[in-house]
Length: 378
Image (cartoon, rainbow, N blue to C red):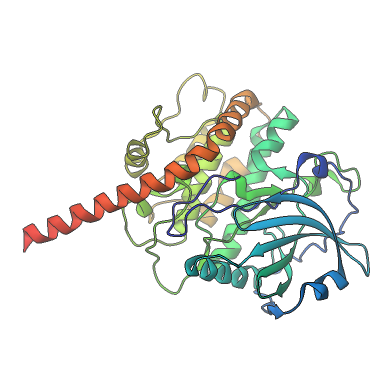
């Protein structure tokens, strides 16, 4: 179960990635119908009011890959050509109205985007109790898990990852879509690391997933949401915000990629203290963990983790940064990232619930103080 978001709807999960056993399955190159790299919105996919049998007539449903609070994901095969996809089945029955609206927003956004680094939605089958989504089968697993499994990592590989994420974010932002939940769990490899049926470059393709909190905006956003460790300061300050929050999250991910631990943390797992550090941009590059990391890498991290969203690095600044072009091969310590993943897995279930509850308490406290301040000034 992935770490939770703090939003009105509570914790969510998005188990698109297959279990390790499935992730090692060899797939034919191009079997998923990879999208073209065009930068336009595609025509929206219509949600068909249908029976489950209409979907099973077209697809052969196979083994379960994962499950969450409302969704189950299975591998499926299109009968006419043998192409493999993932079938995400969302149970609508018992869902609160808020979550149903979030689901509608998620599928609406997914139905109009098409980019090599974003999970693609191919078809929707809407039955009275379930929504069936035919999407990319992402067999390579989560970003950090893959790095840990490989055992070795370099700044150059980190730069390739950042470059792909930047392209995905730029595509969304040009369409006025803010993801709002960029984190390692939502970055999946398309192909398994040992898939011999695709070339090495294709094995490194990453896709951004989970659009449950994404929003196509026509004005500044105000709803506080995201995942605690990756949320931007302006969200915590209850200020109107926009696409800049995604670039902050990328900065957090890059920091962890380079040193193996997050820039903002509290030893006692106190979210109030954590949020205070985030709002103040209180982080450092401690020795000896950052001693072997290039100054260019640190510079890009600093530009992304800028508290003022107007001064924060954007797409053009990221892709033109010298660090992405230098192809530095210095090795990054994977052991710290392994420990980070292990600790995160152990705490994930507890932290999901606690993070939501603590944030709600914190926001309520801030609201009360704001009301009291306004009353005093009257």
